[in-house]
Length: 170
Image 1 (cartoon, one colour):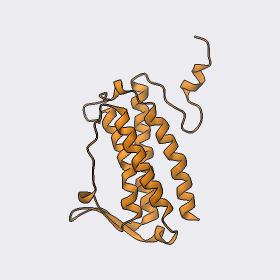
Image 2 (cartoon, one colour):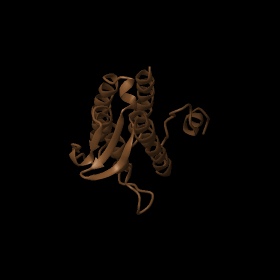
Image 3 (tube, one colour):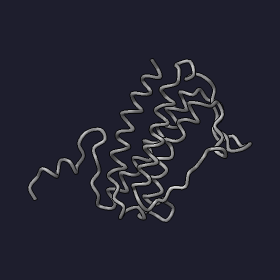
Image 4 (cartoon, rainbow, N blue to C red):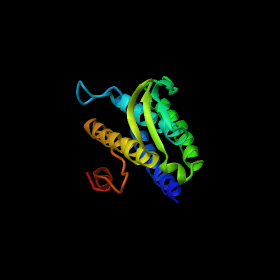
């Protein structure tokens, strides 16, 4: 039951992520709101990459970022970022579907080599508190990036200002 609930949320929220990523035009990928921020392309790529971490959370008890197979992806075209998202989405979906409710309570941790990044936690806490909330946080940032560059923001949880304005006469 727990895995089914996680899968349902994952599928619904991945569709929202897909809508958001598809709304990013290539000509904004170099925009960054401050000198300390990522570019739009870097942020979009990070969102896509986090979906790649689901396998390491669902299929291992120790996720070593040093062993994670990062694949270089250009941040100047959304096409490549969207392909990475779709690939990682599918692998994540499969990992969730193969899981059991009992596995949700197993201890899990994230390391980088011999350094612990996230100490032992029940897997369900990592899934909700780290993976899913991590994606939602960065989607919120991306909405600000889209708005700051004058682009339409797609409705993720209902209509947006942009949706309401498109039906009004100019």
